[in-house]
Length: 353
Image 1 (cartoon, rainbow, N blue to C red):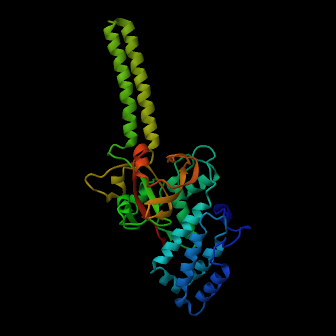
Image 2: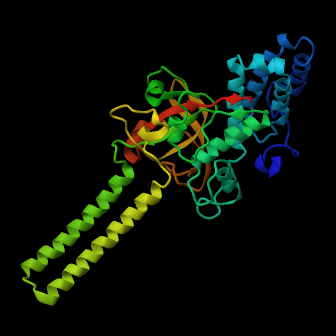
Image 3: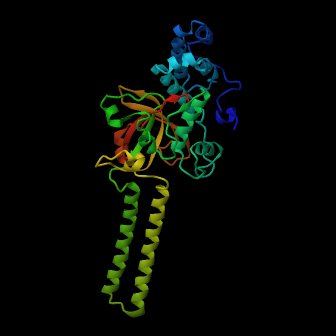
C-alpha cells in the first residue's frame, strides 16, 4: 500500500500550514537553526512550534507533511533524538499528530459489514480479517502509522480487543481510570486511547442478554406444558405438544447462544488478560469499545474523540459503520441509560528501536 493511499491527507495540492498564525517562514527559520551546529539550543523550540501547529491544524483539510518533516529531520540525528526522548514535548507532539492522522480517515465508511478497503487495512494492521469488529484496529493503526511517519514504532497494544488496550498496557504505557479524570486528578490529552464498556458483573453483558432470552423461552415452554396438563392432554396429542414446545425453546436457546458467542468471539475477560490483573473483585470486559482522544476540556470534564467502527447516532454504536467524531464519551447520565461507563485512558508512546 502506498503512503498516499494509507494516508489520504498527505501530499497532493492541499495547502501546507492552513490558516495558522504560526507561518511557514518562522517555522522554516527555526527548523534550519535546529539543524545547525547549535542544534542543542533550538530543537526544543522547533518541537514546541510543531506541536502548536499540529494542534492548530485540527479539523482543517491541510497537508501535515510540512509540519512534521522538520521534526523527522531532527529525529534522524541520533544525538538530538536521544535528547528529545528525554522530554515530554516529543510525546505530546506525537499524540497531536496521531489525532491529525486519525482525522484523515473521517470519511471512511464500511462497504458491507465490517469490511471495505480502508477498514480492511486497519484490520490487517492487527492481524484480523474483514468481518471482525475494528474499533481497536483503527486506534492501533492510527498510532502505528503515525509512528512510522516519524521513523519509529508505538507502544500502543497491537490488538483487535478494545479491553486489551487497557490490560495489555501494563508496565508499558501510562494509564489512569475515568474516575481519576472525573475527580480532577488526571487529564487525558491528544492521542490518548479511551477504553469503554466495562460490564458490571463477571458474567458479562453478553451472557446476561443470552440468559434473558433463554429464560423468556423457558417461561413460554413451561406455560404451554402447564396448559397441556390443565387441558388433561394425553397420549400422542400430549407428546406432540411437548415436542413442539421443546423444539421452540431449543431454537431460541441456540440463537441466543450463537449471538453471545459471535459478540464475544476472540474476547477474554479483562481479569484474565496479561495474567497480571488479579484483583479479587475484578470485573470482566466483554467486547468493549475504544478510540482516540482529540481534545479534553478540564473545566467541563468532556472529551472529543475520533473513533472507528462507531456511528453518528445519539449513543454512538460500538459496532457502527464508519469513523466519526463524538463529544459524549464522558457523559455518565447517557452511559447509564444505554451502556456501562467509560473505564479509563491509555497513553501510548513513540519509541525507536
